[in-house]
Image (cartoon, rainbow, N blue to C red; front, side):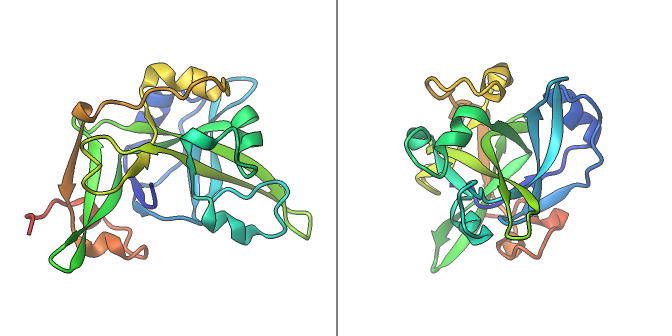
Length: 217
């Protein structure tokens, strides 16, 4: 799954990597959690732009926003089948920029967090879907979910699922909502994982120390 991640690259790097129409105003975040507003890349009539979406997809037919906390991730294998995701899968794709994501591994009776990132430490894009929903007062809420796939050999010791991380060459097709076979994820060989400070286990901690490596117990 993907329940926590970091986005620390400078705005100019984000704009260049995703070919955005303009450079976004965005601060680094080291511990992004569900229900927060997160930046996502969407295709517009003029080109790619960054939008702020609530993490946890709220289907257009939902009676209340609470369902979003159950829909922070979407299994890639069933996107076309699940009522919560199938309309967004047909029409509304996005990319969620990230520098790392986190998973936890049981170690000596506790859960040790790990950071997973590209081996070259480059910014990457996680496949996502987005949706529009109106609350009872008629206010529009735009939300999103991160698509997951089976974990690769690097992530499998930590969790059986992982975000679908796309190669830049696949960004155009994904954003165009071409709903054939899912794009291939970047290979495990391009990634690395390392234990990090337990500070990240508390979503209130959004500090650089969350990404700092520690000695493995």
